[in-house]
Image (cartoon, rainbow, N blue to C red; front, side, top):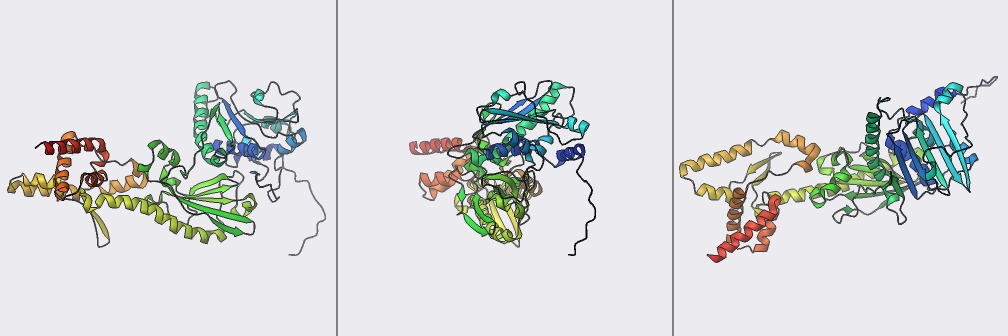
Length: 497
């Protein structure tokens, strides 16, 4: 390209008031903003990070205090400079930064006054960005107070470390500027939503042999492992490595346990507010810090049968440009060179997730177990039909006069033909684990148990085999304690005859 001669130049320094206000609208949420501050603490070697919120005061604030290396005044001024680091520059491996904008843009997205107090080598340095002051002066000038003693939460600093303080929380008040109670309620709700995000994003640091400790108003946060690796029913695949010019991409897929193999609390915890359907897919980590999750990058659709599939992808910070990591470190794009490898991974891990559901589903229609329903697949369609040979139906039909028997089986057929397929499909698409069998009363359960027991014992099956068969099908499975009691009393009665 031919260069154009330059004869004159003009100063195009951006107006401070305009540009610094623009930094507020990059797109941070409260959880991504606090995560960005914690990134800086981790990079500074912090092992203990306190998040302190004062929401009921006339002037509410949020503070993040760490025990990291701290900064000298010169280093602090550099850290407060927007764009303090070139994103193309080589960073140390544990450096979680990106553009040198995080501290400022994350803070400005939530507040109008940012104060940073840092202690290093026995010396304390303080710097303040106040957007109202910048608007008035229109200068790129950070304030440097000499005395930090009156700054909220400064007493939480140790021998070394940094305090990041947010005041003038205009983006967090929910419009309740003059209603302190309502304002506190809004801020506290946002903080509560942030808690889970932090447990997830930094879970690998919190699980280290020397764990990072993050405390929210004095309460230690528990790590949230999205792969449930401590559950023995989780199925991990071998780790794969894709070596590229700028580093290695490490890939490992996991198939989560069926929800019946986890406690309800753990199941809901790893699902999150949007549920497992939206939480399946790739989990992208940069320097062990979670960047993006719950996406298949357009390589396949989210589905009920694959919601147990999760894939961990680890990349180094040297690959930021390839993955187009954004300022907020909350979005990324899949490089074409990685796409083909991930397609093969998807095929394999999807099969594993589908096997979990199909294996359980097969038990429920296995004829050996005398199910209440038959699954019939023919002509490209799947139908579910009540099993009229089930002992509970057959025994009752035998007790009826012939003229009523036909009507009874017609009623059973109508129940099968009236299965609410559309409603079931809608429910299964979003909250399958919430669909449970209806409860039956004692008399109904006794009749079903006794009829089934008679048939299975007549087939010369021993009691252990009978128990195993009945435990996998409803209504016995969902009322297993009562079923065991009825089986025991029925066998005892038979033995006494």
